Image (tube, rainbow, N blue to C red):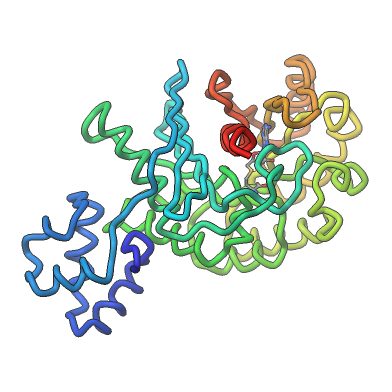
Length: 348
Ligand code: SAH
């Protein structure tokens, strides 16, 4: 069965033509799925009975199952979703002043092996299909609708479990579906892909003709330190990543955000800050400092608030645009992959 949530608009048009249908039916179908939120083909009253029968025989509209749901006192909702094959992924909804942000997973587990991250602990099981990622956003939309009709996910960050650029094609289809005005209609500038730094895909992303954002998980400003905390750096060192980012910026005309996790007395020193400034200033990058979310699954310690502010001030004084990431859901296993790892380890 082909899941219709996985079909980018033009792919749906092609499929309809292959089925002997008119191309414009794609408009009708998208409307039923994403605007009228139909859950069955029976509801699609302006589609012929015969074609509805074909649809129900060959296509599906199934969504992942909500396996557990946690809600934080700050309103953050974290769902552990179960896919048809029993695999589980986390998806999170955060409420900022400017909108409702979905933090979407792109893989079951991750093979990048960052030593501070709970998501990579269990390795990568598989890529998520496009429809499974779309399902994450739809299920978070349902949570919002339960609270208040008309509320919806306004922003998407691919910062859940997985390396989005290690699942490139499915992620690009996902972006086109959620961005499509007939689909979930999430503005391109409200969509961010976060990567640990895969140069080839960074270049390719720049050529997609999308107005979406790119974030690079840098976390260390020199290769010696980055090799220690991010295995991928041994394959693609900082210079290679920065070259690709420069090409991306030139081509796509978009400024890049560098995420920088602060680990106590490891990468939060004055020298590290100076090195970071040298890296990001020439390309006018933003820096997003992330207070480390400690988990009993990894041994790193978070930097004190003083050290975080010292680091941020130094960047700002040197003319770097810097923000400190707001923390959500600290009472509900907020760290990436923490909830899934807890459930899976318990079941093993
Ligand atoms: N693979 C992608 C996207 C997933 S991780 C990437 O590397 O960017 C999303 C972000 O959360 C990354 O910047 C990651 O380094 C960070 N992160 C992972 N574990 C964390 C933790 N325990 N506390 C805070 N941030 C964490």
